[in-house]
Amino acid sequence: MPVSPEARILIVDGDESIRFTFQRFLSREGYSNVFSASSVDETLALARQHTFDLVICDIMLEGENGPDLLKKIRTAGIDCPVVMITGSPDIDSATEMLRLGAFDYISKPINKKMLLRLVSQALRHRALQNEKNRLLSENEKFRRHLEAVFRSVQDAIISVDRHLSIIQVNEKAEQWIADFSGEESSDPKKLIDLPGEFGSACIEDAAKVVESGAEVKEHRVECTTTEGSVRLLSFNAAPVFEEHGAFNGVVIVARDVTTAAVTRSRDPQGIFHGFVDNSPAMQEVFNLIENVGQVDTTVLITGESGTGKELAAEALHAESPRSAGPLIKVDCASIPEELLESELFGHKKGAFTGADRDRTGRILQADKGTLFLDEIGDISSRLQLRLLRFLQERTFYPVGRDQPVHVDVRVITATNADLQEKVRQGVFREDLYYRLRVVEVNLPPLRARQESIPLLVNHFISRFSAKLDREINGISDQALQALINYPWPGNVRELQHTIERACVMCTGITLSLDCFSSDIQHTITPHFFSPLSQSAQPVPTHGRDHQVSQNIPVPSTPTSQTPSADQADEILQALDQADGNKSRAAKLLGIDRSTLYRRMQRLNLS
Image (tube, rainbow, N blue to C red; front, side, top):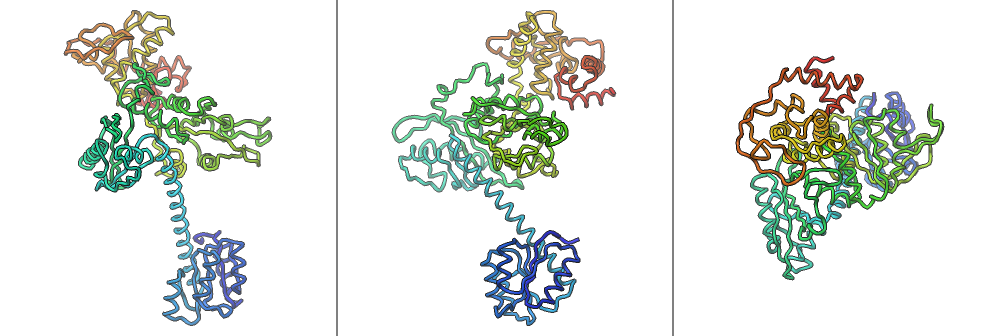
């Protein structure tokens, strides 16, 4: 089988028998697009009609010598490998041909084996050349896209190499450098050239990153401008590593927070577009959503199941100029693969069996608004290609229609899968991955922000006590500590369902340990460090956080069954309530479906 049977090959020779012989050899080998020309004019005419992958050309043609002939071929726009053949080999001529860009220079006679080997080598070279050009083009597109994001953000960004030489600054950084130096044309080459407190903070942070290889977290510096005004700037610095892990430089991000308290008053209870969280990790996420929401670019939301990816999409839409437009949500995992394409792009009546009317797809429904595609990692390779083309052109063809439809829509996607690993495995397109991940919003798991659990617990107690018409107004220290200790594989969603179930089980005004499953109960030790107060009093659902207590001996709650038996009973009850539906049972338990499967397997439940 040939390397590339569909490749276009041009044989140029004044001898008809040579052209015929070469064509026959190649055709019998499986090459289906072999053309021939006997003159320069025929060659140039064919070059205007076709794009060739290989040209095999006699060095003497109609009185044209080798160098002039090769120059004419290149001038005609033929950039593929060109093999020059000669009946009178000459070292000087061969050297000149190769200098002018010939792929190879060979002498007659040429037998079938030599010809096929030569064609195979040249086409492999052509394929590598095309792949290189494609990657360069993709990299250039990605670079321009990143530069657009780089310019659009309102923070000052400065990137430097390992020697603290400045590589790039965005417009905001240029403006601030001018503000602090008083020179509009200031063009510093090294970080040490930056003026005043602004420059000192940048140098100090970058030096720490170079020394430790670790990120320098947010800190704030009062910087005085040349006009005498004082700005409060927030600084972050992060290391940049090459693909193989070598340290490559530092990116410094500075934000003016002088008037942030006036322009952005954050709720003291940590409420942000449906989120309830006051942890530093989630405050960074909220800040990112506020900034990225204003920039009309594609966003990929990542995080484990139950971390609030849909809430993040809603927050991005609410923060965007498109907030008055529609927010259309599509759960790619819940729609059968054979229906998802029609669901997204719509279809024309009669396009397939059962298409009894025209259908407006979700993409068109999201026109002038936002399209949110959840579980994007589960879509088929065919749909990946269609989505990539839509993102590139902002036009699409509904199933069964031959007229394109143009829409103005922002695309936000989300996944709990490792898309980079899927790309490595070859099941997710790399070009689509980078187009979706222009900006990534990563939601940390609940176990990484345990300090937010008390706030969430009180929030859910208030919600479900009202919903269930119960007078529940707090939780015991032991129960709250158990909730903090629990790893929460289902994250906030699991915590929400857990509190709802506890409120159902509670017979008093305080949630206690026995309101929770054995998995949670057994995270508490007989002598625990109370998280909220110096007594084991119930925690109210409002007011300030309590201080950490001293060690208080508290007897553990006895259980009549083993933890495994309790957990098995709980799973069986949920399956019974859900009529055997594992997805519904997982929701009742407040855990992810995959978590339920693992627990059932561990407990030998069929």
